Amino acid sequence: MTGKAKQKAASEELGYEQARDELIEVVRRLEAGGTSLEESLALWERGEELAKVCRRRLDGARARLDAALAEEAGAEEAGGTE
Image 1 (cartoon, helix red, strand yellow):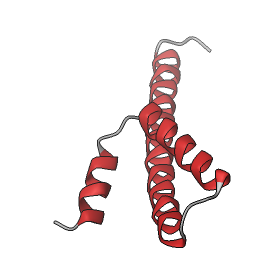
Image 2 (tube, rainbow, N blue to C red):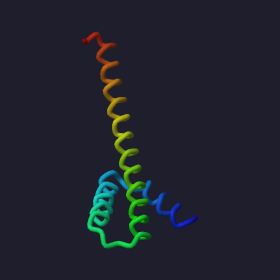
Image 3 (tube, rainbow, N blue to C red):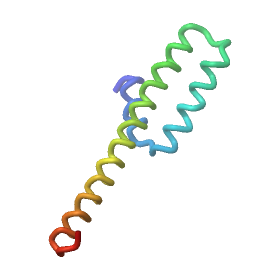
């Protein structure tokens, strides 16, 4: 497994809060400047990966919420409560 593949696999294991906090740190470092082009590119790539993790976690939470709301609405309709 390559270094990037290992990093991506490790990213998938992060929870939303962990990924968000690391993303904030990546952005802070990029905004501060003073890094080489190569390091800046590596930080950018890491930030993109972390942003994807955050988006997937948020999308998953939205899907769970939507499913719960749909289930609740279905139960209310089945029970005759409107």
